[in-house]
Image (cartoon, rainbow, N blue to C red; front, side):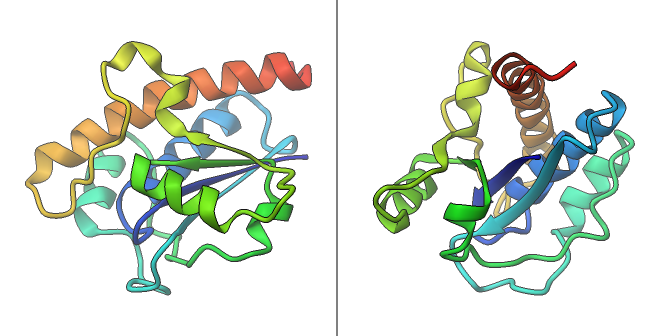
Length: 159
């Protein structure tokens, strides 16, 4: 089982969107038994809360259900339990690298490293903006999800 964790600041916008998009893509590819997916936030402000309603609405319009997700904070055990920890931005990447045990068995990277053609290095935080920001997040994480799945298939010899 390959385990992927998406990480942002509060786990109510970007990382749950990435979790939902990637889960949908993995299930459609018939790889749900091979890849486990979760998300977390580096901060604890929203623990136990559902994703931002604007994120849910934007995702639902694309056939992706985020409603069952609940925010959780990144735990020390995540660095051992997950093979890939993918940060939404540089700030969260720095946080992951600082918290990681040495040696760390997990691959830690920016999620958009899997979508180099987007022109973005970070998934912008849509929380304080309007609905268009959530659409941008969906576009970016969809492209990165396709790239990630392609790499996982190649690296782990998945069908």
